[in-house]
Image 1 (cartoon, rainbow, N blue to C red):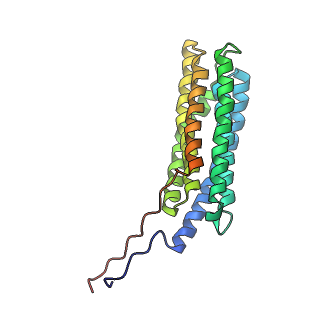
Image 2: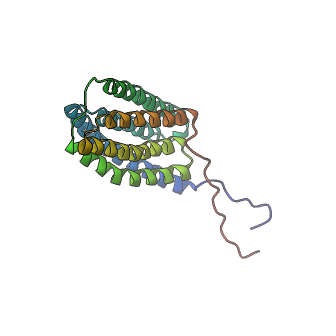
Image 3: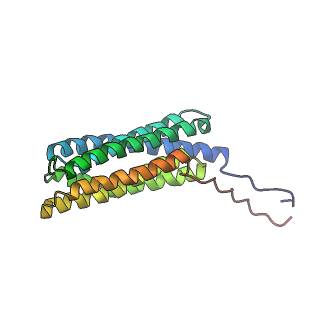
Amino acid sequence: MSAIDLPSLGPSPARRTTLRRRIRLLVAATITYNVIEAAVAITAGTLASSAALIGFGLDSVVEVASAAAVAWQFSAADHERREKAALRVIALSFFALAAYVTFDAVRALLGAGEAEHSTPGLILAALSLMIMPFLSRAQRRAGRELGSASAVADSKQTLLCTYLSGVLLAGLALNSLFGWSWADPIAALVIAAVAVKEGREAWRGDACCPPAPAVPPETDGS
């Protein structure tokens, strides 16, 4: 390689095609799981009067909206042009989630109703705690390599579900084991606070970093 040759930036066209396909598959898997998660969580939360479970279910609805926005973006060949709109959808979804969950949690803390034990909720939280980290890590790696802020933002939404699964599991367990009904709305408020943080980052487009330069091929020094 001559002295004036420079390594190309970012992945090759073939690699970008592979990454876009991988992101679409991961998004499809995320949507499928979260539709099931939302149905179970909202139903179980309604039956148990659990603000945390309902908030978790609504977070799953937001994740579906977020993943759908990324799927819409990557359905076009010039997906970069749709990036800003996809990020706006993701951010607004976070803010809507935070507003509703905060309202419902405050009502619960003021005595509007006490959460009951929920076996389906405990099982769901434990399953999500195992499944979501894998989906988030895979999409984040692909999104960073491709340089897609929306794909990384969506992966952070999925990672948020992992954290919220832990918060939900703790809140439900404390309520079930010790009768601490306040633990459920407190868990819901934690969900809302994290959602606001992630929404702000998505709105600003802080979710990603530029793709790393491709490693130049080794030469024989000629």
